[in-house]
Image (cartoon, rainbow, N blue to C red; front, side, top):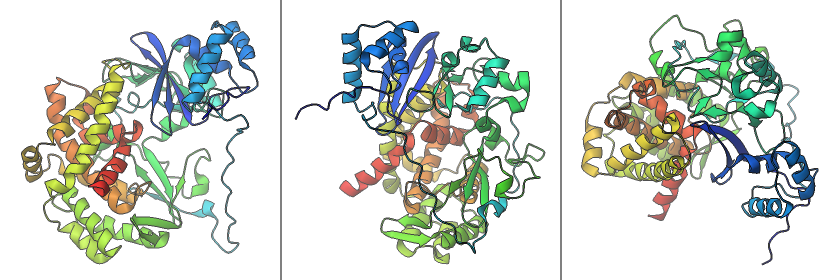
Length: 485
């Protein structure tokens, strides 16, 4: 079979995320293929070529444009570079345009305007941020819109020398050509605008220009927004130590301005997810959205089980057997002890993902990078839990932070955060596995001599790593492994 011809005017595909990392002062560009999870590391010259590949130039034109920007290359070398990217599936097709936006379904004239849907905010929670959490130093994609990026460069022009040159501090959210959003570079895993060292720090944009100087995503974090057809559920992503440290503490900042009452009051740029009309409960079983919404309210009102992880596994089995019945919730409230053999495939799958990512990270991430260290801790914890006796002993021991586990579940239920790519029953098992890993994680943080504040709340650290670094794909491996066994 002959190779597919290189596009005459190459450009990076939209499913490729280019991220700039400064590791010990050395600049590296990582290309992350969002479809496969593969990573490719580039030098400054290769990124200079890609930045000039905007889909309007042939390879010779790209070489000329890159040379003007200080990235000289010979045409044969550039040609070979783009052929390599094309073979890896990282270039857009010749006739590829911008992906068409999904069609907006016609609204029933008699239906209530979605903008009038009330905001249903997670009750009894307010946020106390002490600046020692992990949100500014664990994610590789911190988004700025054009106005936010320009304001940041004006307030802090010395950061990465980005005052006059946007591209010195930012890369496009997707592809290589400027788009609606940009992503700020990170130093040793930390946002370039974060001041301080180690586990402490403060946002220099906030310090210089106040909270409005931060990008919208940072201002709204850790709130999540889901329109379930009846209301907009506003909950919290349990992905930062500050979230769990706020549990039970009144007087913090509200998730949203209390004066906002309906969806139409929200900033239109806020990403509000929408529950589909039909929700997968288990393989081969689904339910109407309204039925799921009513059930989630009953589940939120249920008595928390003595062991949340065991309750989640019991609930998963009940949902598969009988759907959204009251009996399923009763089994959640009074679960049998968690079977180590049932949990083991999930821990094995997560270990494989984390161990592979740890090997990849070791090749380019700084040793000070929290994401690198957290991946190592998760890999070590899941490896140790492969020992049946150790896992059984852990499951027999009382949960070290039951209030944290109960809150994590309450936040997930309220915000429909158990619903996503996995059917509900599998998502429940996934969450149980995460809690068990979080119970074991402190042993390995302590063994590594880690004194990072993020270690104080291991549930949040596990949640941030799984969503923010793609480790949550382990769940599909666990399901596939169970089917093949």
